[in-house]
Amino acid sequence: MSDRTSATGRDGRTTDTRQRVVATALRLFVTKGFSATSLKDIADELGITKAALYYHFPAKADLARSIFQPFIDDVDDLLDRLDGRGESPREILSAYIDVLLPHRAALAAMLRDPGAAADLDLTDVSGRWLARLGALLETDDATPEARMRTTVAIGGATRALMLPEVEDPSARDAAVRAAVAALESR
Amino acid sequence: MSDRTSATGRDGRTTDTRQRVVATALRLFVTKGFSATSLKDIADELGITKAALYYHFPAKADLARSIFQPFIDDVDDLLDRLDGRGESPREILSAYIDVLLPHRAALAAMLRDPGAAADLDLTDVSGRWLARLGALLETDDATPEARMRTTVAIGGATRALMLPEVEDPSARDAAVRAAVAALESR
DNA sequence: GTCTATAGACCGATAGAC
DNA sequence: GTCTATCGGTCTATAGAC
Image (cartoon, rainbow over all chains, first blue to last red; front, top):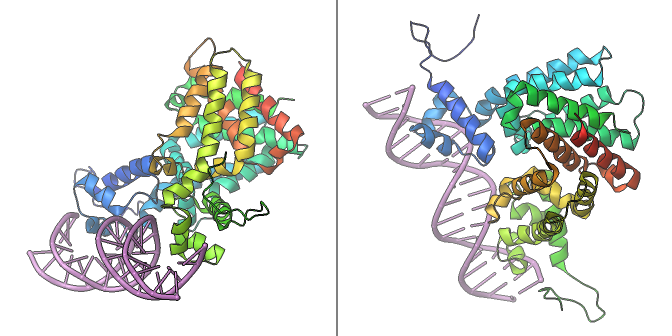
């Protein structure tokens, strides 16, 4: 059922240097940015050599993709699901935050170095998401004023996801309410 | 009164390759990010060689500083002015946007590559600003919920500054209102 | 699976001619 | 003020031994 490349012990435990590589890379991508993080940085932190990384990933871009792809797919799936039906702004923003919540680190890495997306083939994802979400939220009007409100709401909610407190349900709700309030301000 | 290094013609007109360098560099910093923009990129766009840039700026960091410093100084000055008196959230957010408005491009460049600030000696400015602004806005409480609201408000307003429409006073006001609404949501 | 060694490209920066 | 040429460094990636 799984097409994992990496080794799994006969007791089912994943020995996996590969997983440690991904975890270390993600942490460094968040703190230093994708392009500012060299394979040597990652290898040094793991106590192996740069060349050893190429056993697990054919190129730096593949390592990055294994981090960003699941997160990108989840957001795209959400936007597809939301597309037809006319959900309320509250429901849309709430679902947006819930989908991004498990991917906070990957989101932070992408916000930290947006150019990484370009190096990874995918045409500017965050811009695409902002446009699709905006279209869902600007129900009737598309005036400049409405665009500002949706931008404050989405941009603010996205920024709020960078705070560790957002894991707390009560704080999460406060972020959703704030974004909705921005959207409905007149 | 001025300590400009560059040449000025006897008719007062600034001939200045230096100004063209700054303008081109800023444009590339916004689109590609500071560290992803090489001096060769800038030189090619200007039709000169990389070495020629070193006549105008002793190092890449100095070129970047000449772009970011005035903008950083203006924001720090605003926060100093705001510090003592108890202005309303509306006044604070409005002043914040007004100060950043003329520096939209520099702000975009800094958001695009936050690591640039580190290379330029200055300890993470946007983080410092967020903390000081947050302290000004979280008047009475400092609960996780209040931190989410201020983050949505400030983060949303900052993101709104990236839209060209923000130059239009009516759209600017809508952004301020949206940020205030996020802050005052309960 | 991990290593040493190196190829090949690009970077910031400098020297020195014009 | 701008050029050519080059230095020393770092980067991704590959070759091949163990």
